Length: 168
Image (tube, rainbow, N blue to C red; front, side, top):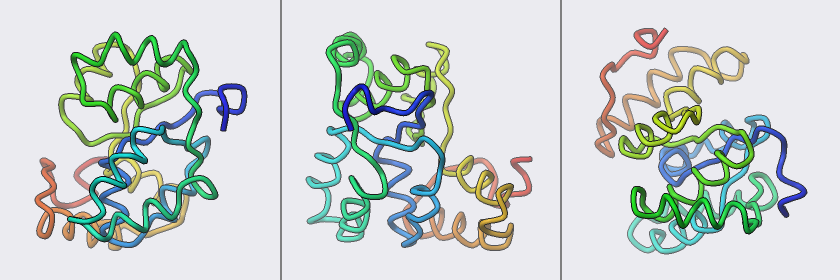
């Protein structure tokens, strides 16, 4: 996916959302989002993490065919360099693409979420993806609650509410 191929208003994935859905083996939910893509540094982070977290291999396997990896333009690279002091590499590159392409950033990282919101970039996390999947009729609320509980109980995912209905 080159700069010319990036969808208008893309939904740009950071590692955190991919990791959560990989953990529960439900990446189809993320792959099914409209205008979804990720960035090369996220691929690198997944590759670096797969030895300690084998479930990340499924996230790597979805890249390219199901979740396109964008080629970073000079404009995005310049924006990434500017924000690199504020965010980790994957977050910086994903933010830079979302910002440059008038898209949204998909991340659960608190610092990245705050920074993106301060910069006027729309942010959606794993809970927002669950809500979108419910609204689209892809999963029911009980399934979303089960997945959310798994993240909380097994990988230490922090959110204010345990029930998906509390986010409406």
